[in-house]
Length: 138
Length: 138
DNA sequence: CCATACTGATACTAAATTAGTATCAGTATT
DNA sequence: AATACTGATACTAATTTAGTATCAGTATGG
Image (tube, rainbow over all chains, first blue to last red; front, side, top):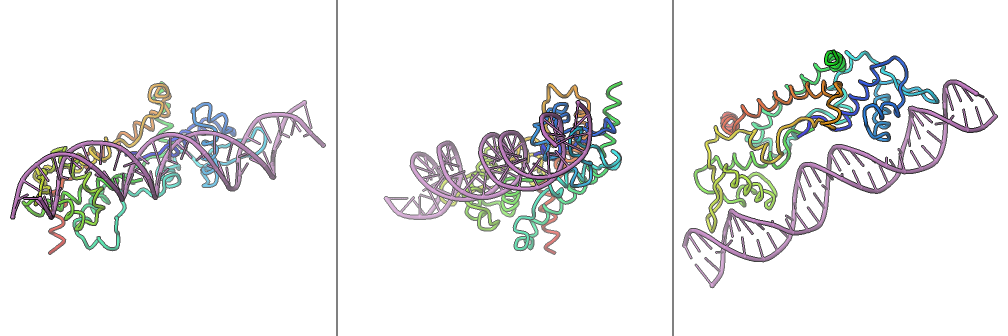
């Protein structure tokens, strides 16, 4: 069971990379520094740009830069983009078997846990990670 | 993102089904009542039996029955069996890049969330679900 | 004004995980 | 001995995740 898939993981790390400087950073550079497959990363950066988290500049010396403050970039949002809604379980057979109380009892409990996780990921921002990174470098 | 895959979900529902009676219940019956594909369910029940959560009886009028009290069957254990360890993220590049503090900062935060989730699933037992089911039937 | 180093868009393949099926052998009951 | 079941295991299908490849277009520096 994984809460983060690779593309979310890569997205976070790419954004952290961008947070290092005000300049535009090319996908190539991010790819090198974070050891993320180049073409895969490009798609991720494009998605980030489309969703307003990064700004792209085309042409030579182009690249990407953060468009929002790290403290405004919530990991939950990134999960939403790359993995869809945070939803811990489907209500299988939603319509038919939810009359089946047993199943719903499970579902109800799962929903509770789901809320916890969502809250945690909403609390967590890129800034938290930047801050902790710096702390660790001392 | 799903915390429970279908086999865990099926396992829980199968165990709930078994909890209804002291008698042995055949896979066929469980399959019908819970609308779980028969052959798939059989594998799940066999796994539950192997892991000591259900007792199997062979031959005609055989089937499965609970081997533990519902209050002793923790959902976390079922997750462990059917989905492996609860682990929200791999530390990709574990050995090499964990020197990379940025990644580790993320990982540290994920571990915290992971602990929360694990604690919740350890708290939750089959009995909680049975109880809530009965409540709902009033 | 053009070579270069980049992004935009998109189509594609590969790998891994999850879900489901099928089959044959053996066992307890009547 | 027929029946209704489990044990074991091999297999296929579907879905999700990960990664690759390619062509078109853009900004910049020489």
